[in-house]
Length: 325
Picture 1 (cartoon, rainbow, N blue to C red):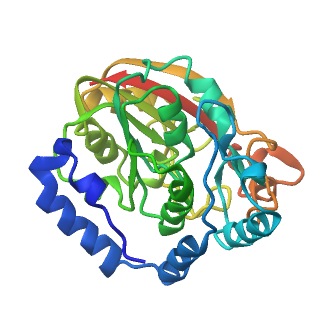
Picture 2: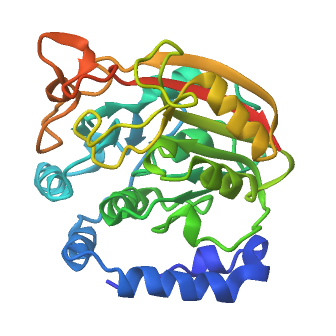
Picture 3: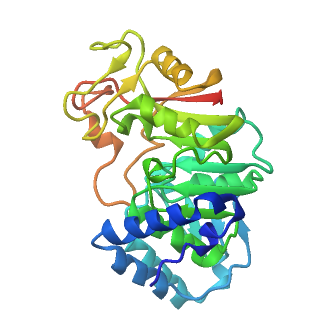
């Protein structure tokens, strides 16, 4: 299967950076090809040809078609093939009656934040670290004019392709890159989301500057990240720096307090900074399901005290900030 990014590259919005973006995508897909990418792309080609009689983005469940649109054999084939793309982290989805119970109930996060952000109707949106694209579909459901999702994880990209096989949306493109791969000062977006990314960056300020560079003047940043309370043990200038792993994750570098996060946002050029919600991740929002292989949050917490990770740090607590460029 040949990956074709022409719809993205040919958008007039990206014309000033078209050549640079084309070269970058070629490098990402070819030079950094995942060992299973061709296998996954063959799965997308093998998905049964079914016409979806309905598509629903505006409810908690991303719904693609009805069970009555497909034969039992097609539904069985679809279930088998979609399971070959496990783990499905963000969702939930329903493909023609095949219910994908993802590890994260991502709809709950959307329910918490969507009442507080600027109405997305007619806006051009960037979702950094978009996973399989669940929240991007919800953004379209809220009336976004166009959504670009970026995430370097090839499995998530292929899960997006599975959705697009049936949805065929002209308003949502996904490119398998990180924000550091985008051209500098690609100032295009009315709203930029970064959810679940900041703590994976060694340099918080650099990530915030990169996010700022994607926004037009007056644009809005929606930033969701792990935080710790001010009285957390081991803070250094308002940041918890895990020694090795945090909740079994190797790549958690910085977990700030809200006060420190506000300072970093100001330094990066943002104003009108607000914390719109805080939430301790619950065991029914992130959990092990039949659509992932391996452990989930429960196994990463102290079995005798779920207020702590198994390494002894405070259990995952998240905050969502909004700010204006």
